[in-house]
Length: 412
Image (tube, rainbow, N blue to C red; front, top):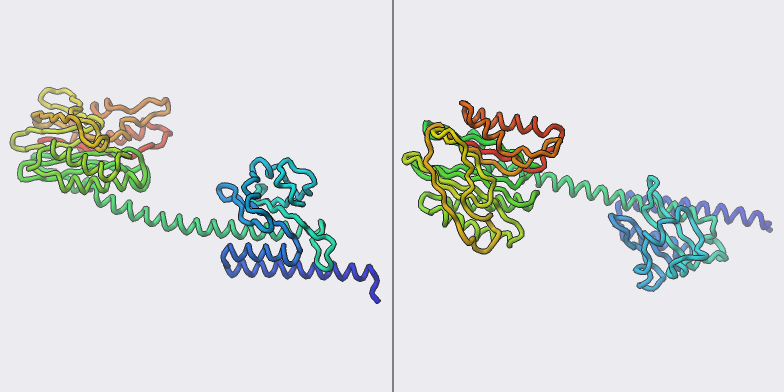
């Protein structure tokens, strides 16, 4: 007949084999990439059926703490426990003889699960049968439960990270596609007119892959050109989507036959329909007649373009117009401005990412550097390049905080 020590050794060996088998089975389930729900159900089965633990509660951190297991307790108990105030100070396996939160008094042991010295889960168990014959979850086996919980939680976290990486990669590809599509909507500087009547040049740098800035140059007929520059409030994908829609509307509405005031009113209607007043667009829109040399424009809340009048040898800020597009259902008043353009005059249109860029002393770039470049006897291409070089030097170690758009026109 076996002695008591032999029986104890046999029980220890039996439980050691059980632990190895349990860990192996869990590892196989993880390798088979079974659903998280099935993995947790298997964990519950081990605790409840094999180790005879009646109450099981588990919280896991996933951007915020959430309850992922609630077994053998009233459904209201998990909501009555806050990890931040009730559990975070438990650094090791602790018997719950006394707890500040009465809900925790229903349990016997807290088992924290750490990963890289940070808590990632808390397992709380109760109704432990320590007198059960065979495989009894006595205190000396709680380290096994902690190890098992750690393996499962880390596997769930790794799976989440893999899924997140897949989503991010898909999102990145979608963003790259959106960026390419948006680039196709914005005129390539090489496609802008360069003839004996007008010469245009431009520069565009989105802050993110996609941006909320937009410029365009359209030949309306044999003697007229239309051009504009715009900026959506806000940044990112939503701004880019609204701007793409706005570009389509500009192209559809901008014509030699439709007066500028009517064009702006119709654009306001379209933006209100699409943005519901949540975003607005600042816009400078103009039409130039190469025969009469008359330019008419409306500035709808945009940064005033810098106009260098060659004949008068002075700088004019083109600010006449109205409020931004999409601010109200109806624009209360629109002022249409006109001016005669002398040969050799230049115009610089820009977005606030240029004028409001700050140097290391928190001073804004402003418009004066642009005006200084324009009065020089340089081509508009050179003027654009010089402004960008000065902007890059001016910001020093500061990053660009917004989209950068610059469109220049030289009138021959």
